[in-house]
Length: 388
Image (spheres, rainbow, N blue to C red):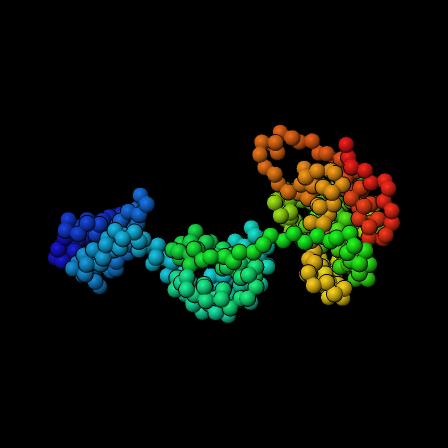
């Protein structure tokens, strides 16, 4: 191509390209309207990329060749100039990116999106809100985590920020995740369970803690996840069997189970008495304005620990662990515990073993509840026998 050739090139009925023999990958695109623009075409991961260099009359052939040469050099270094340009154009600020991530992905697919949003708003946005996402570096991530004293909390903040960048890469908004290769804090696996001597203390305290206290009693007696207990719906209970849909039910504000598998568990007699009512709809443990008591369980448990003077704070999830431990302590085995607590085991057995174990599940739930009640109320438990 020459400048004279570019000037005299006539449009045709359809768009066409003319390729430069002097600079590899440089093409002149001519539209039916007569508009002419230079393009640089290169291959990245075996896929063609078309990089718009600019209007032919504005940059000239010599500059187009120079720009195309620079693009090809960046490609040789392993870069993807077209993706980087798109990322810069779409990124906006990190605050805008976090908003897009929440609205377009997290709300629809991440059941813990509210917790992640709170972490991002409280710890990340005050430092990164007005920054361009592609300008945030690994050093920025490390500096952010250095301001958080609690190791577990720092790990959660890192995971929440990393999720935003991972999604942004898939959307071609950014090309890298600065949270990668940042070391997470080592934390010990939590093993806290209520001892037999603590059970009466907590049981009595639960009885004075209103709706949240009743929910904590049911959590201890059923062993399900705190988020599932707090969102228990009467629509899901039939003949004292509680069926938890695996997928979220938006109309009922049901969040779904953690592993996405529908789960069915027997409600033992003490639980039946705790939740007895004529109502057939709504949350079992409705808080203010009829909403679920999600946050109330944790705050109530902390208040009870303070009142009892217990330094090793008990969390709602520890009640679930206490229930699971009681299942195995009574001799029912880990398989029964996994089935009742909805732990996904995986493997070919899950495909072929469709036996529901309803009789065993009912017996286990009644036996464990009886044992816990006996300890909590200081009674002798003589009729708790492991299933054979």
